[in-house]
Every structure is written in structure tokens, then in C-alpha cells.
Length: 308
Image (cartoon, rainbow, N blue to C red; front, side, top):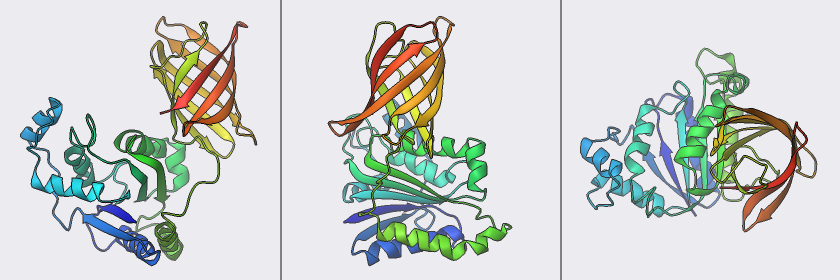
């Protein structure tokens, strides 16, 4: 099987370069193959032209796509999976990789009447100077995941994984202490890329919308829930339809049921809150939750949310 690797780092003298090499060795040692776009080595033009902008902004599915972009399209559609390897710059990928998405995710390929194949897997391997705990505490990791998984890769791969190699800044003593361990981890990610699967049930980074609701409920098919999980703690933000902004927090039990409290502001400016218990089910390959909820005023109802 084949992996398309999009690598982006301005220096060959970097941990990220070593990370990429270890991952690629794991891929080949597993009997699989990869193709590589090294964006700096190939001097990829990250600047979208006015012509490209007008084509996509006006939803024109025309054949006038630049030759360098067609090559990237071909790499994607000739692969089974895609991996992005890069350092975190100010809670974002390097500008050259952002520009890669700007130009490669063209109308008629990545959205609209898509010619882009549904990939089996997408993975992000990124190096970060900050400790993982700080990225989580400040909400930076959630932001990074939402952009990469919830926008750029959403609906374009059957499974997704976001892996951070933290504390890699040059002044951090952990950089050298964790060097070999981190490279071994990257190698194993490559070696087990097509065989490794998540056996643990998790709602982390999964996105849902309501497909059924009682009349006294306020969420609809326009409401989007973005879930997160750490150990047995779950939380989500939601909005859309008559919901201006909502938050929920609770726990997941051993049977994967969710138990949480929720509150939101609706379009009438009212603050509504309550509690909910949800039971999971896989339906047509998608995760669903059957919810039983209760407002603080005593009204009760049921709803069903399903993963996008």
C-alpha cells in the first residue's frame, strides 16, 4: 500500500527532518511504499494567484489548473493514505504547508463535485516546542486539531490521527532526552501505519449533528457538536440552527455511555440548561448516540445525534 507524505520544514538540521526519516523507514520496513512532497526541497509555490482564487471563489470546475497542482492531485489519488509532517509555528503549520492547502484543495477536486478519492487514513505528525500539557491547558492543541482534522481533512479520510512530539525546542533539555524515544515512536507509527487501529472507544475530535429530536428540544440538523475526550472526561461545544453557543461536560462510562450537563444560549437570548444520558450505536458505519435529556424546568425528551 502507498502513503503520500507531505513534509514541510525549512531546515535539514531539525528534529522534524529526523522524525520524517524515521517514519519513512518504518513505512518501507513494513513492506509498504511512500511518495514524498518535500515542500521546501521542491520549492513549492505557496502563493495562490488571482486566477486560482477567482476560479475557486466562483466555483468554476474548469480544467485550467496549474501543472504543479495537478501533480499533487495525482499523488493523492494514487495513494491509499496521506501523512503531514511539520513543525508547529505559532499554533499553525508553516506558511508553505498552509499555502499547499490553499492551492491543492481546489474546487472540483477537494470540494464541490470532488475528484479526490476517499483516503483510508490521514495522519498528522508534528513537532512542537511547547510541552503537550501547556498546549492542552491553553486550548492550543484543540485549535490545531480543529483546523487540520475538522476542516482541512474533514470528510476526506476514513480515519484520522493527530500525533504531537512535544518539548522539541532547542533550549529544552527534554529535546535530547526524548530524542531516541521520539524517533522510535515515529518509526513505529510508520511500521504499523496500515495495521494499527484504535481499539479504544473514543469521541475525541468527532463531529456530530442531530438527526432526530423531541418537539421541546432546540437542537436540529443545523446544530454541530464538536466532541473531545481525555480519559473518562468528555466535553463539547455546539452551535447552529437556533443555538447561538452551547457547551457540555461530563463523563463516559465503561459501556461507552455519555453522562453530561449542558447549557446554551438560543437565538431568543435565553439561557437553557439540563442533563443528558446517551447510549452509543454504530449504524451504517457511523457512530450514533441515543440521548435522553431533561431541562432544569423538568421537561424531558429524546434525540439522536450522528457522526458526520
